[in-house]
Image (cartoon, rainbow, N blue to C red; front, side, top):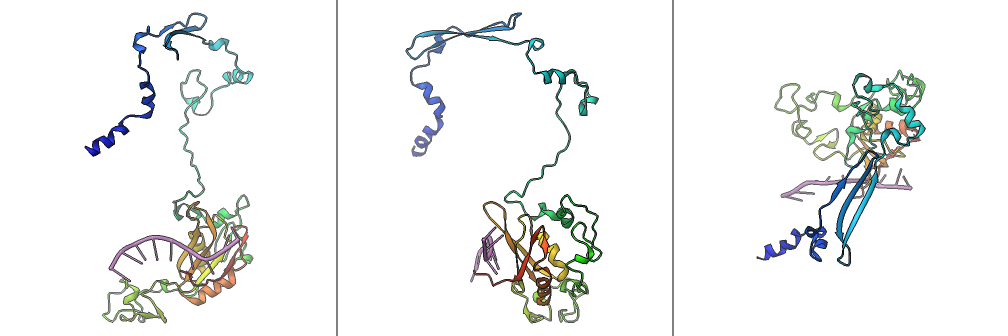
Length: 294
DNA sequence: TATGAGCGA
């Protein structure tokens, strides 16, 4: 009922509607004839139609099919015919064919499509090596081991003693943090259970997401992504979160991001060292982030 | 140019 009648119109396609105005009398017409092509390459098609006034009209279409030998090819095309086979065609019997379907694998590199995430970004290779686009990749920093970015003397980490003992480097069940129950050593202890169930570790409430020690990084090049930021900041200490602001519509980086450190001192040293540091041909601005407005 | 997501009691 209601449903059926509602669906009825959608079954008729608009393209078919036009044929319905005026009856289709084509069956009254003689069939289409194709004559030739003859030895001169002339092909004739004879067909009949009704014109707008409803009169029968005979339509003859004459086509000349150029024979290849007579075809007026460009000089260059003729010349190509005499080329020896090359590429994949060398090993194949392709007759006089000049073109082949290549089976060569070609990897297309798409600039970040919206929706794709960090896996595609520079972290796949050595990010800093790729930074020295076109430049010699002979530079190898003896301090941090990065290639292609900077010499040892310019290493942003060069006068870092060593990345200060970061929490992740410690076994999770050190005396201070082991649960009172005395778990097997090496067993994972969720932060909320560390320190005998007390929620405070190092003065921080570990049950809440760590929004502390948030560092804002601006003037990022547009192809800097989160893994790149992590690479850059990790040497200063344990990073709890990296975030690069991305335009939801375009997928383009908005040129700034945030890095959260577990330890405030590490964040501070990162700010001191990386603020003003040239990265991807831009000068980074690194400073304490204001708390999120939300 | 420039201070961030989204999950669901």
